[in-house]
Image 1 (cartoon, rainbow, N blue to C red):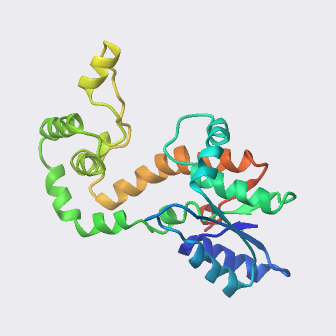
Image 2: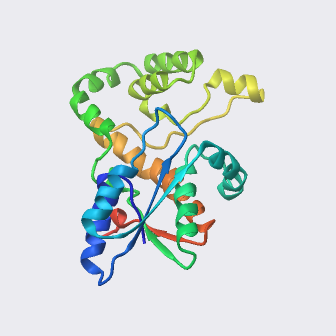
Length: 239
């Protein structure tokens, strides 16, 4: 089977899988029944499923059902993560729809392999400006980055810190906050230097950290919690 959203990655995988299958493969999507002002990709997923002729399963989940599933999700999570609930819910929906299914295909890794995130385009368009910022003295950039972290933890502040000091973007706390919380100053090793190319720098960080430490780990943990094995064709070594 395959997880199918409204996105290009999963639809491409499903289309290619259907070329190789003598029978319709099973596809699985989740949507939301009671939530308002939230993006729901099930209509787009249904278009893809109808176009490719899959055996499609859709689960419209309510706010209450999500809340009731949280204890099981936290148990499956195993270690702290900022993601994973989506993988857990679609895995649970898959298991509900087919109790004997063993393997599912996922589009995870497609955005990193083929530069799908809009942030990559944003960086490529502003690389000249960023090179000027990164040419400033390191101590000056560190000072500004630390000051921004002390303000708040909003997405805008995080984005500004990443632009000014990319190698510090993974630090959750400033040095002053660490000192206040632990009573000592910890040495934080940022092993990946900033390359001259802004796009390459971000892509390298995503491939070396965000993809394996969060996306793939969460996908593996959540699918295995439902006795499923997930495979990610976009990350095939030869591809």
